[in-house]
Structure formats: C-alpha cells, structure tokens
Length: 237
View 1 (cartoon, helix red, strand yellow):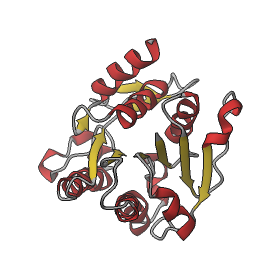
View 2: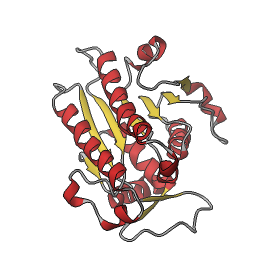
View 3: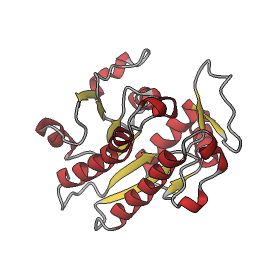
View 4: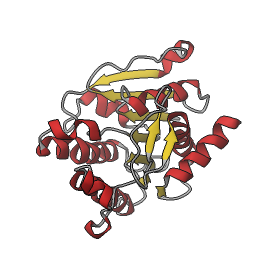
C-alpha cells in the first residue's frame, strides 16, 4: 500500500511515519511537509520506503509530487494550526493552513488519480479534533473560554466539506474524519485539563489512523474512544 502523510514532520505525523515504516502492509510512503521528512530513530532499516517532498505552498503542488500521488492508496492529513499558535497567527493564515491546505490536498490527489483506477477509491483521513462542531449551535463553553470557538467551528465545517466531497466523487474517494481529544506523547503527563476533553495516547491515535488507512474505514467519523480502542487492539497484537 502507498500511503501519503500530510504533515509528516509534525507531532502526530512523525509517529504515523514511524509506525508506517515498521508496517509490512505499507510498501511506500510519501511525506509532505514544509521541511524535509526524516526517518525517525529506530526505523532506519525501512528508510527506502520513504519519499520526502518539501512544499512551501501547499495550495500548489509541484508536478513531481502530483505524479507521485497518482497511485496512492490512502492519505492521512494532519496539518493544522495548533491551539498554542492561534494567538500569534493571523486569521487568514489560520484558514489557509487549516482549511485550504486540506481541501487542496484532497482535490489534488483526486485529480491526479486515474478515473478508471483499478486500485479502488482513495482513502482520505482528515484529522480534526474532539471539539470541532459542524454547527455553531453546538459550540461548547470551553471553546469560547479558551478563545478557540471560531477555529474549532472552521474545522467542524471542514469535516462536513470533506465528507460531502467524497460523497459526490463518484466513488473516487472515501473519507474518514478523526476527532481525537488531548493527544499525550512520552513525557507529557502534565497537560492542561480542559473540561469535557478526553485524552488519547499518541501511539494509539497513530495506530488507529494507520489501521483504517490500510484496511478501510469502519465508519466515516471516529471518536476519541473509537481510536483509543482501535489503537490498543492493534498494538496489543
């Protein structure tokens, strides 16, 4: 299977890359980021599976990357402005990175794929967040308290756009939305507690998303609990 990781140098992207390099089901990996995607420590034996593409403008893909995307089986898209960077990022930049880049990836990969592809539909996973309502009436108080109401609503509405695009793609794309809570990595035991926000281990969310990309989607939206249970089962094996 050929896997595309959008945001392959990020927090979740790096763990996805590490697990994908170790997975015999993944034969080729395309890492897309604004800087070089390097092989994580401990995965050097399978480094030949990885191709790194540096994109300064993720709204416009170079021809070499478009060519590489023609036979991709799945994409996991993790790129977004993190809550920690929200206050220092202009709103138009937030929209570009969070919404426009994701839609550009989805459209570009669909257009690059042959209409009569024998590989079946592209499996596109968009990683959103637990607090990402698709309707303004569902914005919770915690989002307003932390100044994250608008960006969370933006991501929720993007979820709907991604699913709608796949629904109207004539079976060229199937989509899945992942809605993790607070993602905990090694050494991150003491994180800010947000009322109503669940947590999930980094390894578990990565294992769950990779498993769905490889085997196909069980449902179009995965909750934090869904991914926690999936990730545990996969890693226990």
